[in-house]
Image 1 (spheres, helix red, strand yellow):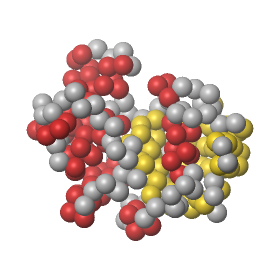
Image 2 (cartoon, helix red, strand yellow; image 1 turned 30 degrees about the vertical axis):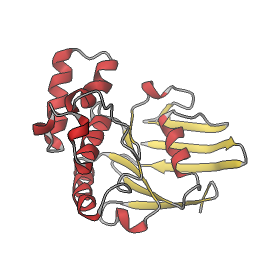
Image 3 (cartoon, helix red, strand yellow; image 1 turned 90 degrees about the vertical axis):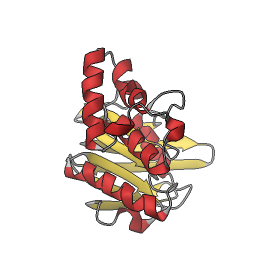
Length: 209
């Protein structure tokens, strides 16, 4: 589970918070709001890419307010997927495991398992530039899930896809829900999480409303 207690963050003229939030284990929560409302900032605070000015961030009951990103049990899917273009699909998925110190055999085993879950086992040797938009998204999701995070953060995961790919992507996200993965899905499009989200939150001007 993820718990935010009185989180406040200031950047220039923008202030986020105070935010109080509970994400129960296994929940799929939609965070809805317009551009500039603070959605992505909240994800980055949970992920450890930014640090709050006030408040606490607890993950699985552990205070991780000042813990660096690499030490948090968090997976994140960025809007542009942020895949490493010089690596293959297999190398991208295995990267978080490799930097965590896992041996080659463990990396290969887990990479194969997660690739099978997202139905991209046939793409493992392919270069990122040779993937379609939907394939890139599945690769990025697989990488975010490779180290079995406590929570998965999705930043506008469908915004770059056309309608056909979006339908396929929603099916992929449904796999996460079926697996019981805790998910926080940020979007400006209310209909995007229909059939996926078990609850929804709305943010505007840096505050949950």
